[in-house]
Image (cartoon, rainbow, N blue to C red; front, side):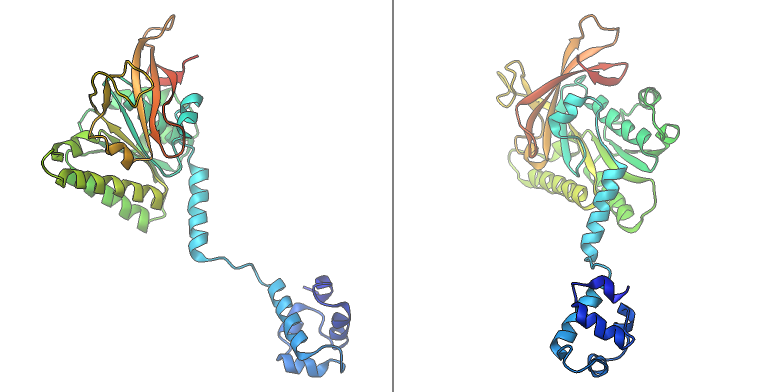
Length: 333
C-alpha cells in the first residue's frame, strides 16, 4: 500500500519527506529499520520522534487486518450457520407468528388432549426442516412406542424441497422409555455436537411425550421428583442455547375444573400435566385443542386452535385457528 493513499491520516509533507528517502510504501516504512533509524534518514525538523512513532503506528494499523476475538467469531459463526441452515416453521403463518417462529434456540412445551394435533405439529415442523435443508437432521425421542413410520412417510410425500429424497434418512428415532435412557441419548447428542462438525447436523429435538419420563417421579410428599424435573428441563435449555437447538417437548394433560383459568376460553377444562411450575421451565407453552370437523371441508379435515398459555417472547392468552387435512397443517381460512 502506497503511503500517498493514507493522506490525510498522515501529513502530506511527512509522506513527501519519506518518499525523498526511498520510503514509498507501508512495507518500506515498517521494515526499513527502527524508528530512530528512519528518523535519521529524514531531513532535520520534518517530524519529531514522538510523531514518527504515532504515524508509523497509524500506517501499521491501516495495513493490518481487523482483529476479532475467537469466542465472538465462533458465536457469530454458530448463529450464522443456524440462521442459514434452519427456518423452523409449521408452514401456517398465523401459528408461526403466534410464537415468533419455532427456532431461535428455544424449548417449547406443546400440550393438549389426544387428537389435538401435538404430534402432527411436531412432525410437520421436523419434516419441513428436513426437506428444505439437505444438511439438517432431526432427533425424535419416542417415549411411548407410538411413532408411526407410515404416517411420517405419508406426510413427507406431501412436502417438496431439495432434501425430499433423503429427508427420512435424516430423521433419527430413538425409543426412550425412562429418564435414564433419555439422559443417555441427550449426552450422546451433546458429545456429537461438541466434537464433530460433520453434516448432517441435528437442529431439532422432539420429545414425544415427556410426561412418562418425569411424571412417575413426581410426588406430593417428596421434592426429589420436582428437582429431577427441573434439572432435566434446565439441561434442555442449556443444550438449546449452547448448540443452537430447538426442543419440542410434548406434554399430556390433567383435569382443571371447572375450567382452566390460564386459557382465554371458558370451555377449556384441561391443563398441561406435570404441575404448574413445568411451564416456567420452558420458553413457550403452546396449548392445542381439536374443535372437530371443519365446515364444508373435504373428508378427514379437522379444525384446531392453538393458544399461547405462556411465552418469554410473545404475548400470552393469544390464539389462532388452523386445520389438519390428510396429516398436514394448513390455514383455517
